[in-house]
Amino acid sequence: MSSSRSRVTTLARHEYRAAVRSRALVSLLLILAVVTLVSIYIAATAYRSALADYEAYVSAAQAGGVQLVAPSPLRLLSLLRGAIEYIEIIGAIIAITLGYLTVSRERANRTLPLLRSRPVTTGELAAGSALGALGIISTLVVATGAVALLCLGIIGGSWATPYEVFKMVLVGIASVVYMFAFYSLGALVTARTKIAANGLLICLGIWLVVVLILPQIGDTLDADNQIPGGLFSAIGVDKAQETEILTHFGTYEFIRTGIEELSFAKHYERFAFAMSDVQDKYQGFTLSQLAREKWHDIVWMFVYASALGFGLWRGFRRQPAISQGVKS
Amino acid sequence: MADPAVEMRGVSHRYTSDPVLRDIDLTIEQGEVFGFLGHNGAGKTTAVNILTTLLVPSAGTARVCGYDVVADRRKVTECIGYLPSDVRLYDHMTATENLEFFAKLSGVSDPRKAAAGTLDYLGSSDLGPLRMSTFSTGMRQRIGIAQAIVHQPRVLFLDEPTSGLDPTGVRQLRETISRLNGELGMTVFMNTHLLSEVARVCSTIGVLNHGELIYKDSMAKTTERFPNEASLEDIYERMESRPA
Image (tube, rainbow over all chains, first blue to last red):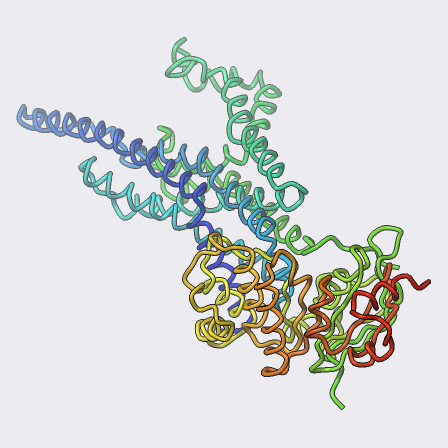
């Protein structure tokens, strides 16, 4: 192993250990674990009951000589909706806290000068910290996914197919990218503020806007969302008429969609919901169809995460160990 | 002839418009224990920050172990150990974990052995398994010195190492410095206020006054040069009162 890679690995392990030993972070992780488990448990219990009803219907139909039975309306992965929403909301806070702690820990312990007096480059410091954070985030996502799979099988009574597991893996990758973007935001903003706590407050403000306010504005402005089941269905307008009506509201829809598109969280949510069969319209889609439908969400997710990751890289590289002077 | 351990040529530095260091020329040979004296704000810490590569000088060049602190930063950091003032290290880790971490970063091949050996050398093996958050100032300082020497550097920089220490801690530190210099041959560069300790442990002293190096010589020649002064404190006061 090259010495540079060895130093990056050492720094990453150090970051991982610090995160695991942080009471604040562990408390947040426990909260996420509990609410996610409860959400999946309740959904899986309801699913088991619905599955029993469907199986009873199939048995009764077959006993009555009915040849053609309705396909099951149940979608196993849709039970993950709660877990995805919790990762979207609480996962983002955990990632921001992780980024904040990366910087504030070095400041509080005054260890940055010690690190910089070793044969460690600023690039290695940035890479090590980011790798450690990715390790923590991946552990969290993999653990959540594994527990969810077990809950679906044991409590829900249905084991996921390899195709469904693969789609869960894709959601997991998106979750890691999503949380890494918020980690980068937390670390970058904290590194740029003189008082670390101010960085955390700014990030929580951004979180509020990106995760809660912008998507809520988009949802509120969507006329079809105002009535359960949809406005157009309620007034008996079919899809063709709905499309025709909406062509008269092109500018309005452009602005509404634009506000939603500003939210990094919305792109993650749209992709994850599509992959988990949460939305009816994507049921039965193949992966290539899903990719065609959701390519812009995938692109935006990577654009946001890459931009913030690059910002973190530059921010760490430019962060002086001590305040610097002036060149003569 | 071997390169000097530390060499500064025309080094100046300023944070704002006022210079903190002015045209410093200083050479410290290998194996010396150098005491850098000066009042608060004289520029001692700035000088150490430049020599430990944390700060780029506004003007001039500085070399440590023969390497330029700006152009050969990595080479310099491989041969130095550094103990900043008010060191804390990582509170969530034990003393041994802290030492292993810094040893790994310095490229030590067996960090565990190096950490245990360093604690043993400093007579602090009992502190190894304890978390840093439970440590007193004196204990932290011992582990701080351990992290600075765990990779066996050639030059050791100590910035106000006695601050916050009780008399026993100061004595232990003095003994440690003498052993590091005598047994391991380390060059020691020490910023301090405690002149009595400088008199006991340093082979050479330098005095910085408002960013200017106003005096540098061996302890032996210093006491010869000021035969009427009873202590280093008196000598220091005389030097500082002289016009720059």
